[in-house]
Image 1 (cartoon, rainbow, N blue to C red):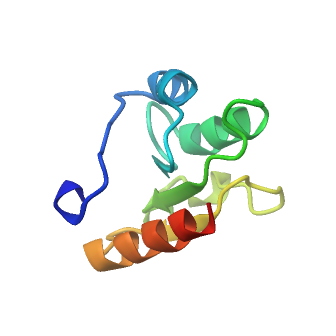
Image 2 (spheres, rainbow, N blue to C red; image 1 turned 180 degrees about the horizontal axis):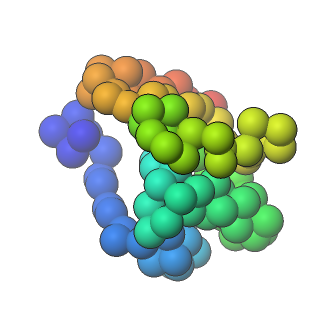
Length: 106
């Protein structure tokens, strides 16, 4: 991703990712559904959407949850606050296309 131009930062947990978003105000966030635990990415997107400092940051959610035992836990009946959803494995070109599309809206 960095080769394509954007500065990339990572976080080792959902909590650290949310704190980093609060501190750094990134242009965009990419979350995995399963981070520290199942659905941490969904919880993080809810936290970001509920905070005035981060609610307008676009979020791309990536996951392979459909291919796991946790697929039934994914909340298909609630509004998940994300701007794009990609299924793993994600081709780098597909991810960059979504990044470009969302950043162009800002």
